[in-house]
Amino acid sequence: MNAPDSPDELIRAAAESILRRLAGEKVPEAALRSVVHMVDNDEAELAVDDLARAIEYHRIRIQRKEYDQIAAAAEQLGALDSLAEVRIDRLIGD
Image 1 (tube, rainbow, N blue to C red):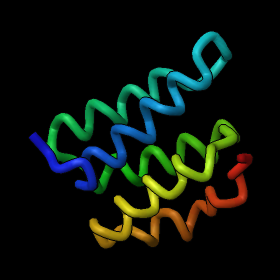
Image 2 (tube, one colour):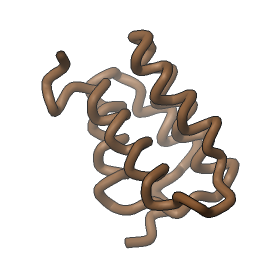
Image 3 (cartoon, one colour):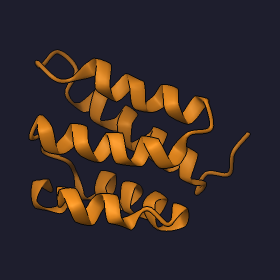
């Protein structure tokens, strides 16, 4: 089991939060579930990148907490370039 602040758990929490929040809406459910699957397969760094790209591509509004979880995971994994490149921070809509 991973620690609550591990990159795996942070990414999973953000992806699942977005899925729950947008339930019933037309969202890229498959892409978000794919992120969770990557985490399950120890591919957290790829999951950060895919999650950021899915958010940006589909213009998913994210909450500050979700962004903070993604950013914390990216920082721990040395993958902040993924967030800087995609700039999902502009999609934060508390």
